[in-house]
Image (cartoon, rainbow, N blue to C red; front, top):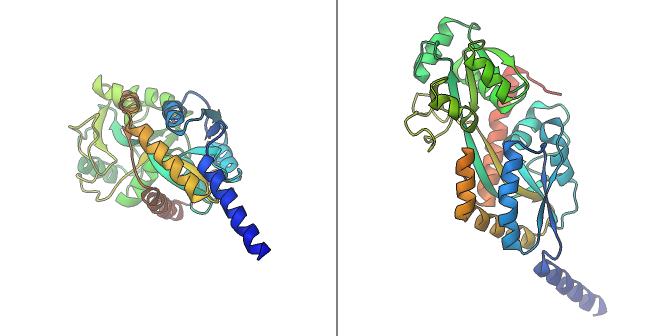
Length: 318
């Protein structure tokens, strides 16, 4: 009888503790250095999330190893709701596949809430390349195997691996030319030293509008609000082709469901704010809103997609 009373009392204490959450500041880990798109995303979301959770949400940059260090840190953090991850598609669906150092499992180790933002990739080419559509681009590559040079933000970057995905699906061959970041890669492409690139809409957009780069297609299932006149690769015949950079809020998987639900509610309210939407639009991003189940499904689907690319190409990145 005493044991039963003890268990009931402990259950009440734990329930009360969860109901009081949060009662101290919350840390939002960004697994990249300050200044990039993902860091800026965190600094847009953190104040809005803080407002709805009633506690400060402090951005904590833990960059390194392509996002692996900060992501692993959250996977190993106490599951009490006070350490959140601004997870990215690269760190959660590419690193675990293409890196031999598998220090975390994105499905096993994390509890998703909602996605926050998404930036689709766009295939852009130097204006001298005689193509304007996806079909023309594929035909050109098949007539010139290995002769067209593809710039990227670096080996293992989303821009690189999207190009590999494209080659696997279309049976074409590009010559990969990696650079130290999207900025240098774009400059070299504009200069005509390379001929194409799969880049974020937000990065290449200004150069497309200035006529320095030609857009071929958006790597998404729907057209980008930033370039509604540019067709998608799906429309161009590559059914289901999709590649983007997206972010979402995640917690360690053992976090109590009541806390996950509370954070989820705060994230949804944060992304629904007009100020949040306006800030993302200025970045060239789109606000995303999804259920934990939808996020988990997307993570699993993307892992399967990149595993097929890895198996076909044999690419491993340290």
